[in-house]
Image 1 (cartoon, rainbow, N blue to C red):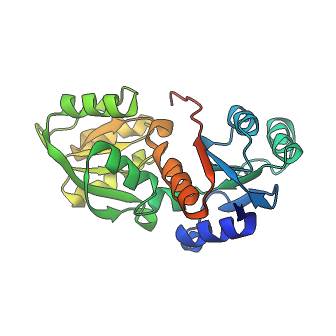
Image 2 (tube, rainbow, N blue to C red):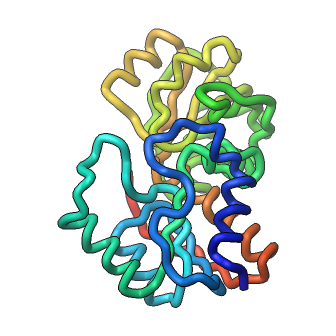
Amino acid sequence: MVLLNELVAYCDELLDVTRFHDYAPNGLQVEGVAEVRKIVTGVTACQALIDAAVEAGADVLLVHHGFFWKGESECITGIKRRRIAKLIENNVSLIGYHLPLDAHPEVGNNAQLAKQLGLEIEGCFGRNDIGMYGRLPQKMKADELTDLLGKVLARQPLFLQGEHDVIERIAWCTGAAQNYIGATQPLGVQAFISGEVSEQTTHLVRETGVHYFSAGHHATERYGVQALGDALAKKFLMEHEFIDIGNPV
């Protein structure tokens, strides 16, 4: 068991939240019970995840995609009202970490994706050093890497072909980081993995020559929040349960 404010303070420091200018607030977003015995983690604070967390007896729901994004309506109506009401009615806190959870060198989404795929991390790039680059466990052709991604992530990636016959060095950035492909050229990589794809991604692939693998926003960002939840459970002797609400995007 741990006090909610102690848990949030620890996470804020661990993830170095003050380093980031983010699109949503990081940390405690909805306050619930003061003492935390069980934490549920998930990717996005959708209604299905909130309902499942309440059913599982969570005191805290810890997510990567929380609430109150820049550019959205500030009014608490409709879907947003129903989600927040369910949390408040059941005294469940919502804690969200976006860019800080992408970038952390151990429990972060990119570090954990590297662990899942067996990638050797050599360095970081991009805004707040959020992306990573390094080497595959062995040289691969594009179809072999496609198969690896499909097997590990349980989702067949969309592949946009560049100009390289063999892939040895690779960059990656989970989620919606497809435009980072242009920033990978100085890294000397043959391929780039992210979550989503845009119309212009095809043109960037053709003009950079770098292969692109759109492996799924949700699929690439399942692992950081799980790793953080496991670390918190171990440190504070809490129960932790990861609940995966499937999303093909």
